[in-house]
Length: 251
Image 1 (cartoon, one colour):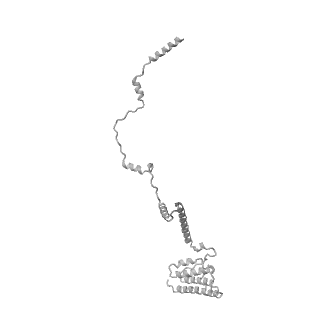
Image 2 (cartoon, one colour):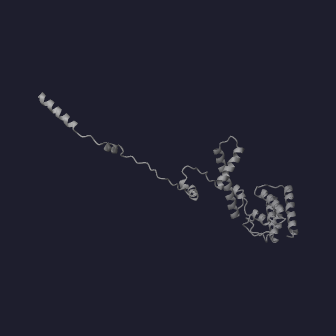
Image 3 (cartoon, one colour):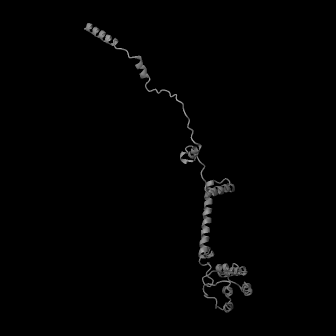
């Protein structure tokens, strides 16, 4: 057995030694697989036109590494200017607090402006907004009706006998309207207010005097002010002096 094993070993060794070696060129070829030979040809530069480059630069699609300054609208500029001024005025106050307060101020101004427009459009009296219904000035001829044919002197005398001076003042104011309407200085209407008539006298020299009579009348009548006889005498002189001015007016 031992003899047979030795013979087998010698046979295998002899077969291994008889295998031919690989050629050298084949080994080199295997080692050079995957290598690209260097290109020694001449390179010709192709410059990009300047006009084309400018087009690319202006195209926002290619602005990968540039951050343009934010666009400020006119309103943004106004806000920045106001905030800068307010910072000087309110030193030490946080910008957010200042800007919030400013917004409320702006909203208030806008609301006031809108209210003014509405009041002007509908011809309302401003005092009707701020006074309660009891103190709100009513139309001037609220109970008398058409004043053109009324004898106010007779009515005034009747109330003076009863010492009703407050009512007498009201009647004297109606007489002033009657005098103005008779000379076409105003256009009397039952639903007009004192302010309406003052507006109609805007170009007249009588406006100032009528405005003073209106102030006296409203203070006494709508303010429920009770007059004494001596106080009434001073008010009466103002009204009758106005009647004389209307009679002499040449406008």
